[in-house]
Length: 291
Length: 171
Image (cartoon, rainbow over all chains, first blue to last red; front, side, top):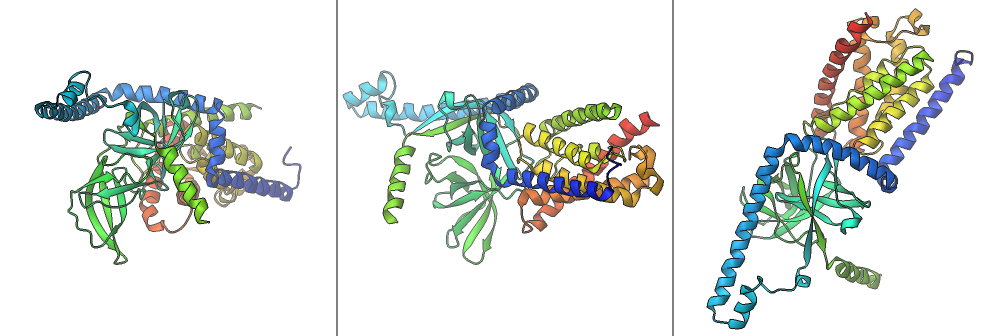
């Protein structure tokens, strides 16, 4: 059938089709929101979610040992934190301040929940990739659990990523291991901060850039989140400083060894910042005012 | 008709195999594993270029949508490979065979010619994957090890698959 036509016409059709398909693919790549709109179509996201869940369940079964260890570590961390508060409670009791002591002893420290700026929503990862330059995760909580776009995602080992799209039951997270992603981080006690980016070379390291040249730090210093973005609370440990070099004589570029192994992470917490609305409104006011 | 059915079955099996590989095997960012180019490589010689392009686009889009990576990356590079399949094939295959219905596999072409044929097209595919992914030439040095490592591992995988599954059974 195709052989009846002249070969030149055939070749022309193939060329046109090639161009159309290639342009379509490139549009999908460059305009990622287009793809995510399809994803957010709900049906697709749910199919993709349940498919990923089946895969994740299979993997989960084979990695129970690691998951146990991770949970034990998280328990230990919470335990030490609890001890800290116990010590604090005893201290206030000894201060003979009976009113404060009563409020502490009864049902715990009597601080209203509304005072806390950050709330955590636990979630499980159902899909994860670490072998691309643009890595993504899917977690099993969505708008139904109160997750919204642009929330931070943390794990026991540090920062995992930022929520990009939300459907009813799943959320699509841009991993820290994505060359377009950056997280504001600071180094050690000096508190010099700069964007932490991933250079796409190794799933275990990231790069902390734009640290001024006069800042002193040691190899092995811990790198924390800076708390300057509305996404993450301050002082979440991310990794330790490794080799560094000075770029253009003005700033350090420090390799950071991440605490979190992105291949084994299973449980995460989504950070909900209650003040983010307020902060964003404020900065928007400022922006419109300055125009 | 019969060819269409067997192509569809092969298409689905390659897609499932690729999804299993990309979901369960992870060697970090320096190495990506692909086996789906083998499907496009071994479509019959006589098939029209238009249908090769469509098969390639379907395969790439399927991988893109069902695996969480960058959307359009696999389809763009596989369509590129499919488009250049015919010129490469006409370079390598003997004149008389171009009109026949043979499958350009190892058994039909011989090991050396198949290696050359697959090598050229896989190189095209891998170069497009790596460069479309970072969208510029600035990361060229950083991308080189990823390109070379993935290319060599995938070529080995492809030869093993071709030899293990198709070569023996079609003989």
